[in-house]
Length: 482
Image (cartoon, rainbow, N blue to C red; front, side):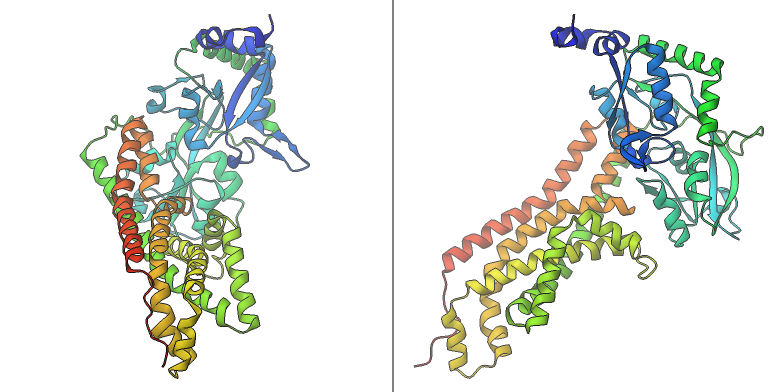
């Protein structure tokens, strides 16, 4: 019977192996942002995926007698996506940890690695104990993250990609990076100003993740892995991709199983800190965006031709490109020229972006002032600057105020994007806690509640301002000369 004819309920109720064979393919999730050598686009043919995990899954699919199909997914959300049925397995540098074993099924290891500590060349900070009181970068929700959290005196800086931690280490924003040996060898130790401080801090294994209940599929994959290992195919894959081998020594740290995290008062306090960071970034960014927008609006309306053109170009550039891209360029791309901290870059990046939107708000408000007001001001002998300051701007700002308040609400939510440059604000804290407590329901509900608590008063303020503006009408600030 063709797969399209199978009832949906039957497919959902089928065991993992039966479901895969019914589909004729095994669907696997990963994140292309992880890059080389895991899974990435072939530079010679961007339509083709390559990597040692691509080779591994294809070999496993061949053993099962099915095709393989890749599903792109953010790495930090691979487990929730697996649980909701977006794909059958996770194959993307998934690390074997007790916390993960309590949530999903894991296969036998398919690759062993060491956690490696990388520092700037010549640094005297050679161990984790020596890094107490210092900033150490790693990937969120990784085994290295778990190790660093057990060292409470270390300030942990979290990243979403593999290149960024070593980039910040070069720029002296952090003092060390702890990550898997595969990542360290590819992204850290290729930089001449970085060196290996400890090659064997701890050890771990990459495994395949499966949904609870798919034990038959796990057993089939384990058998296929054992066959690939016995045939030497696994070794050939790793040799082809130049993967580092685990040394025959004892690691300096034995990873211990941490206690199961609970959503308690301590977690709530972390959320409140994240909310305070979100609110601070939003208010400070808006405080910069409003005057910037006003300057741009005045330049477009009253400036000379080159000034008008530059203001227009700025507005279109910042409105026409994603704020996420602007944050990356400001924090990473401009780092050799302007060395900003993550918090400074977050505030400035959002301010520069929202300044473009505020410019259009101010420009529309100025154009909404009746022309007779400018004529009356000129008749009274006021200069252009006096006319703007005493007559036009007070009326325009009153008109623009509700829109500015709405923009502040939007900025409050857009501030969640700054987590990409290592700022732990409210949304980032929610994702970290969700992984820790293995649940998205309560952390998500609290996060939404705090956002609502911050934005609702602003929404009510905007409504009241609009009502007052409508009630006040358009009373002239100056009367025409008689």
